[in-house]
Amino acid sequence: MSRLEALPPYLFSALDEAKHRRMATGARVLDLGIGDPDLPTPEPVVEAMHRALDDPRHHRYPPQKGAADLRRVIASYMAERYGVDVDPQTQVLVLIGSKEGLGHLPLAHVHEGDNVLVPDLGYPVYAQATLLAGGIPRAFALRPEDGFLPRVAELAELVDERTRLVFLNYPHNPTGAVADDGFWKRCVAAVRGTGAVLVNDAAYLEVTLDGSRPVSMLAAADLETDRVIELHSLSKMFNMTGWRIGFAVGNAAVVGALGRVKESMDSGAFGAVQETAAFALGPRRDELLAQVMGAYARRRQVMTSALTAGGYEVFPSGATFYVWVRVPGSEAAAAFCARALEEIGVVLTPGTGFGPGGEGWFRISLTAGDEDVAAAAALLEGWS
Ligand SMILES: Cc1ncc(COP(=O)(O)O)c(C=O)c1O
Image 1 (cartoon, rainbow, N blue to C red):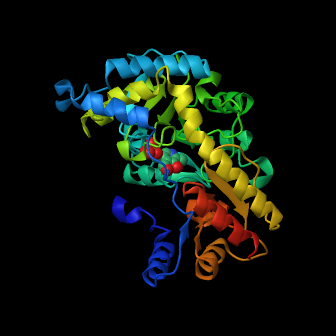
Image 2: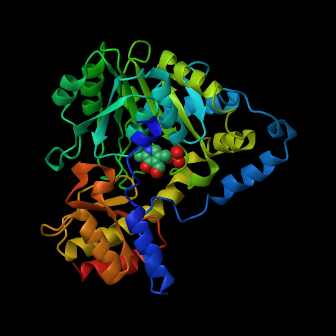
């Protein structure tokens, strides 16, 4: 079997087809399926891009590891916001979105037949990128009774001499679970000295809607000696999913290895986008973030109040723009979501789209307009 053939089928295709069939009939569809911000990138960021476009330096290939200026801004951001000191020269790498980094990371570490630990449930890219690199994804459980954090002792037992990477993702898609410093310290200690690289996919680190302060995994590690890397993204921070910009920070050898893979794969993110990213992460960052997150916080409130009133069990979370909800009764998640589309025209994502551990749950994305979120909330409240 080729590596491509080893990739699992796209689990959402059946639901996608059903959605399009319903739309073709002219019936109303409220799509709370995909996690792609509906609101535009904040105007000051777009204006910065307009300015950057006029600079002919950006019309040429960008610097391979990312613009020096952006890497300096990223280092200041990590220090100010997370108390993490990184060397912009060796410990920061600009990515074409965090997915690009996640996709390339196994190529830097995995030999044919090596193990990679991936969460069940989780973003499918960790396992898919592992398979494409010839590795074997080994799932570890995330359980509701543990707040969807892995049991660190279990994780430690799974790491063996052929384990190259351990993927974690906090704040977590799809559950919204959050990790604190104590959890990270235990994880870093469990993987320390094993030869495996501990990865945190931090795409949602700034999507905190309850005013709590996000915690970076790197604050719990010694970047000189621990083989750790964290992947960040501007996509969800500033409604910039289409711009394709993110960055990796961590241990210099691990970051450097990813950079070497990228040298053979791409020539970096568009320079004007990098200059704009430096603007967004710069002095106006907090004001821009507050503007973006305010909309999701309001929507989460509307949705969770309606669901609670409707008798649903909502996983308590103030992070990510997802709401994670238990399927009422004993219906399978896929059947429940298919029925939601058919009976009330609301697109939901079955938890099983993120692995078998998602059975019995569904995900609501708050990246639709305020009116659609409120309409879907009202429909769900009076249904099921
Ligand atoms: C958990 C997680 N990680 C990474 C990404 C990729 O984000 P991007 O490549 O836009 O930075 C996504 C996108 O939805 C995601 O949900």
